[in-house]
Image 1 (cartoon, rainbow, N blue to C red):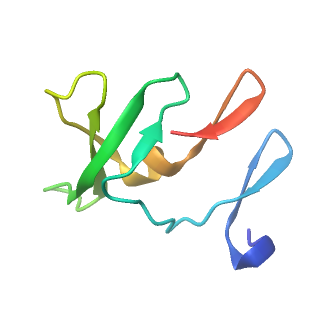
Image 2 (cartoon, rainbow, N blue to C red; image 1 turned 30 degrees about the vertical axis):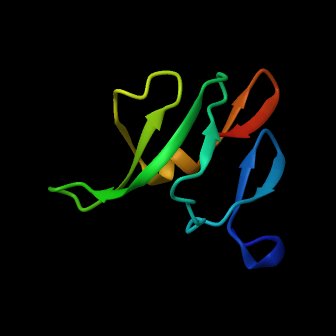
Image 3 (cartoon, rainbow, N blue to C red; image 1 turned 90 degrees about the horizontal axis):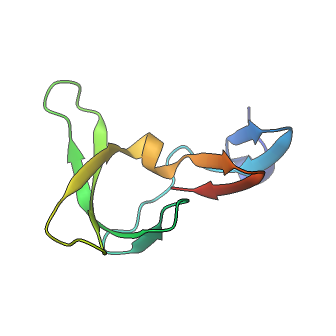
Length: 87
């Protein structure tokens, strides 16, 4: 479905949010998880078997570990207790 600004529209609980499927991820930027912790994006990698794009990120509360999450999942909108937020 295409909505305002020609972006794909994701419908959550009958509300519309403009979110491009190809939304740019900012390398080096801090992102706040909907549960409260902050993370820094290190880069984007490709899965060796599927070639799916994976976001490589590091928790700011524990900088000794690196984590990966599919890019689509990292950028998706999440509803929690009636509020909608990203990652």
